[in-house]
Image 1 (tube, rainbow, N blue to C red):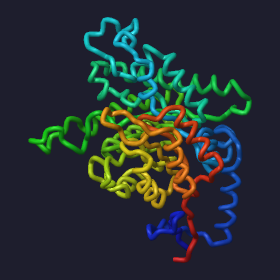
Image 2: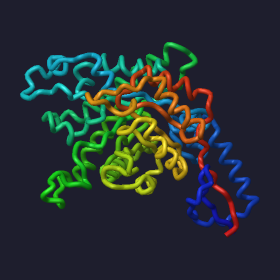
Image 3: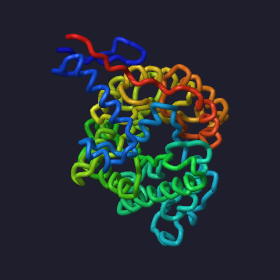
Image 4: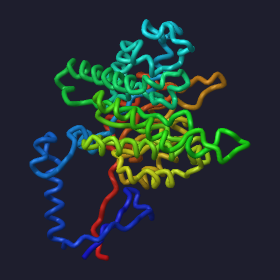
Length: 398
């Protein structure tokens, strides 16, 4: 008998044993060869099912491409929306012209009132070189929408956001036969504006403004809208509280279990808030990874809070412990005194190119302050570089 030993691509001391398997080396080699053959088959879900496998075609395709090159995820949606200098009336549109409270700043609502703007932004990022575009749904769950008394719109916003992104992708594909089958829409699932691990009341540390069940219910509705709208991936991002992320993961798993559907690939991206290397809820990067690894994500990574220069050591650490693909989409540097981002596209791209040369990443892009110019520069800088190699699973005798 032999065991399977996990080893990272950097050959660090991080390791753990997998369950023993009752096959000898010869049959192990044969089975391994067959698995490689089957995984490389370019079949759809229906064709694959005849072999007894249940791989989603979107997952298969993106995994095949991730093994060949570094993929690009888009940049900031909010930064691009700000360029349109929209007024309160623009946010309201005709449908919400008599809404009783101010709604300017509710960017997710623009999927209903200004869908042409959101589609145009998606297409700008696709033209810049993005392989993955995110839906405009960062705050589109009923907990966050409660700030505008728009909880009832959660499902509709997510559904329409997915449709808009998918339409943008289809239009982009139609412009060139070389683009057929390329590009993915990721349903963006943000961290909520309430945290499950921390009290908003300094005088009552045991108080929570939200329960786990309430978070799950809100995320479940969001996931339902995104999936039924047609996304290919689900991205749980900007995680500062891992318990919120676990609620999102639970909601995703529950939705697909309830619907008796095969789960879409899940991407997970956390946020290191400062030089301490911890999330806001206090976890180290390794603790965060271990807390969400049970979701078996397509990728795990970091985004927001830090610029590429400041994020580098954390991405290096993550690349050494993650058994899945690694993503990173930093801000355009750190904000200036006015809260704006000054880092030029070429500067951001050079930092990320360094990560790629070191073999840290599989998916890269931008967060706050980044634009299509940043994404274009990043894509150009990494297009000839090899992606991070996934950790090796070795056969050794127990």
